[in-house]
Image (cartoon, rainbow, N blue to C red):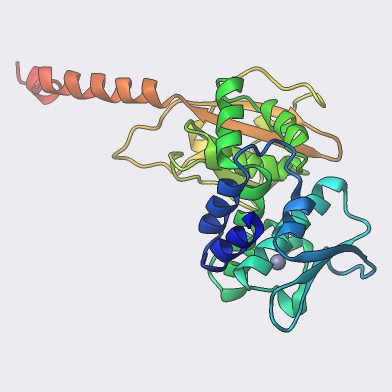
Length: 292
Ligand SMILES: [Zn+2]
């Protein structure tokens, strides 16, 4: 039976990535928004119920044999956070890793560090949740059809996939082939900075004051691409030329600014090649011309 085949395949998976591959393999026609509760029920979650506690966003209760579980979600959660919480707890259930006492706090749902066993488990549950709600093949196709990165794509994707803007932004930089970063600025301070794999080391992180150039955008009107000061955002090095950085800002209500930084990697490669060619053709430039 298909259900048994999926369950036995999942039982042999030890990471978020192998679990996702097995699930996607069994749902080849998966579409956005992903029906996370249906998938949870198919793999052993018998109930998703309201959680009365105020201190936790979600919980997981597993039976003694570890075969079935009940997920609880705080009633105050938005539909997007509720979906992410269910996917996160499903990650704990399938990975056999539970949060503290089977409960997870709001901060656990944005954890991406792996420096303690607890954070590692939470980060893994989050990778699973993001990959389940925004499957890589679907997200890659969405980004491809949207074309060149733009900050306005992030709320669009959040709406398509039924997730928060934060979750869509994190997944965006995970999946995009472009060299870009997305930052959340709250009341002038960096709340999150999420760079894509190829983005250079950032000089700015959580808790740092954002450059003042960010804070003048009008609410819900994305700015055009602006020239950004590389030194405001990137670690500087004497040996390496700073790339040209473009910036787009989308101001939201409640003092939130979304910033997208973009580097045209192909143009940067061409500029490096030109600089190298120039240096090779004019080896005596500088000191040589002084000696004349
Ligand atoms: Zn958790």
